[in-house]
Amino acid sequence: MRVRVVTDTGEEIEEPFLLRLTGWTEARYFEEAPEDRLWEFQEGEVIVHSPATPQHQRLVGFLTFLLKGYVEAKGLGEVFNGPAVLRLRPGWVKEPDLFFIRRERLSGVQEKWVEGPADLVIEVSSPGTRRYDLKEKAGVYAESGVLEYGVIDPERREVVIHRVDHPGYRVGAMGESRLASTAVPGFWIEVGWLWQHPLPPALRCLRQILGER
Image 1: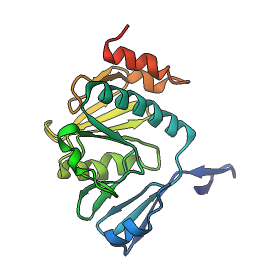
Image 2: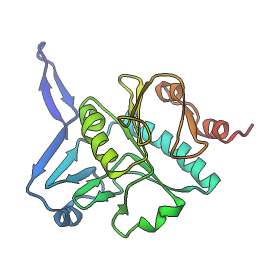
Image 3: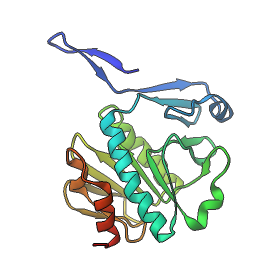
Image 4: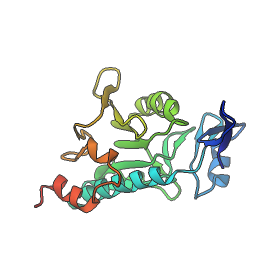
C-alpha cells in the first residue's frame, strides 16, 4: 500500500509513507506486529512503513552480502535484516534494514528480538523516510548507544554517517569516496558501488574488501 498523490498536471503517483498508530503498548506490538512487514514501536506509537521498492531491496541485499560475508569470514559476530527486531531499550523497538552485533554481545539475541544497542545500523532511505531516518532515528540510536549509524540515500546519492565517538554524532555526507567502518574493524565499501545500475557483482566486491585477488 502507498499513498496516491495527484500532481499539478493531474497525474496520479504513489508516494512512500510512514503511518503512526497511537495507543499501543510494547506487549501488543510483539503480539500483533506482522513478521513480513516493517513495523516499529516507540513510546506508545507503532510506526508502519510503506512496502519496499525493488531498488531498495536490491541495495539492502547487496550490502547484506558484503557485510555478512565479511563478518563471517572474520568471525566478528552476526548480521541481521529487518523485520528482525532490535530492542534498544524498553519502549524503543526498531527494525533496521541491516544491523550488526559483535560476537561478545550475541548473548543479547533473544527468541523474539535482539537486545540492543547494535554496533552498526544501516538504513536505506527514501523521500518518505528521509527525515525520520536522518533526524528522529539518529537521535534514538545515539541515545541508546549505537556505535555507528549509516543512512544511504540513493536519490541524493549520498551516505550520511553518525558515530558515537564523533562530536554531535554526525560525521557528514559522502558521495563517491571509500567509506571505512569503525564499528566493524577492517570493513569498507566504495560508496560509488551503491549508485551503479545494475549494482556491481557482490562477490567481486567482497573479495576486494577481504583483500583477495
